[in-house]
Image: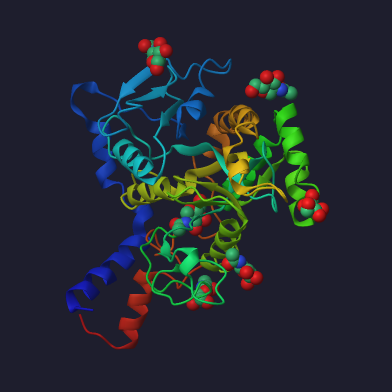
Length: 396
Ligand SMILES: *[C@@H]1O[C@H](CO)[C@@H](O)[C@H](O)[C@H]1NC(C)=O
Ligand SMILES: *[C@@H]1O[C@H](CO)[C@@H](O)[C@H](O)[C@H]1NC(C)=O
Ligand SMILES: *[C@@H]1O[C@H](CO)[C@@H](O)[C@H](O)[C@H]1NC(C)=O
Ligand SMILES: *[C@@H]1O[C@H](CO)[C@@H](O)[C@H](O)[C@H]1NC(C)=O
Ligand SMILES: *[C@@H]1O[C@H](CO)[C@@H](O)[C@H](O)[C@H]1NC(C)=O
Ligand SMILES: *[C@@H]1O[C@H](CO)[C@@H](O)[C@H](O)[C@H]1NC(C)=O
């Protein structure tokens, strides 16, 4: 490592730790010419595709289509952010998979049309679900989001003898090694206190279920380890896995369950699969480094639309292609559970949410970019460099 990098990282470690005091770049937003006031929503709902977005249109509680705001840089398929007339709630559809999610969220957080310093972000989408943990129609709230496919991959037909999967962490030589090459987006952890509050709000909802979903999940009852998959849907705390490749089947499910556990040092529970969350979180994390958003104001809600693997004696392809699993209730439940979270935040704004919900857990990425020591992974790279250099007595 060159001396100049060491100096930069040392400075950045202190900056990262001091970041909550940084507001300089944000204040200019309130001082724009022409009396223009940026929109400052209390809740920003993040949807990924049409059905998830439409779950919020035409509802009795508020009119999210009252204001349509064209934002440069967001998806050409969904070029507008939608907001209520009083700006309390906004919603965007990012487009699917990691590149669309990161590009859209970056465009919004850096747009001068918005001031998002106090905004709560509700990621509200459907997901595949692990029948060992939960079931179709369930509403899940994640603490960890793990980018499970950010790994090396050998086609499983060519995998070394004795391996259970062709996936193995970057910089490693076996699926059970902790990755030694990190890109920084492998694991994100969000505010546990806020998650518990969101769960308590969502628990006041009556969830939707359909006859199709009921009969489909009953097929998982014959396998002991899939018992949770055969139970009625609930509100549940469990984690989410991001991959651009849409994985399906028991072996990949088990491999990514192991990856989730490995990357989070045993804390993460592999429960849902989706194609965006770590990208959304990385864009929000970068904005948080300059105080444009608060990383402790993020809720990851994923409702389960389909199982990540077949029931016993069903083919993988039949499970994947079955369109009548839980999509209907999962879309309904985005609204039914999500509206309780939004109303809870709006009603409790002055008393509780405006000031923020203090996190007792580590909040941020695997690098420790926002300061503090991650409770997973090798530890903050910024503070590790600082420790190493002070040990070596480096003079700067
Ligand atoms: C906003 O756009 C939606 C279609 O996306 C439309 O239905 C609605 O009327 C528009 N709202 C306004 C105020 O123009
Ligand atoms: C992705 O984000 C989730 C939090 O939603 C976190 O648990 C997970 O570790 C992240 N994965 C990667 C690879 O960044
Ligand atoms: C996951 O880990 C368990 C326990 O180490 C192991 O038995 C299993 O074969 C692994 N599965 C895959 C697909 O890697
Ligand atoms: C799966 O199929 C085999 C062979 O037909 C049968 O013996 C077994 O009982 C089936 N298992 C379940 C859980 O249905
Ligand atoms: C669940 O939602 C579907 C529409 O997706 C609706 O037809 C059905 O009546 C709802 N069921 C309940 C119990 O609310
Ligand atoms: C997580 O596990 C890795 C690999 O065993 C280890 O190097 C690292 O120190 C652990 N991190 C924490 C925070 O326990």
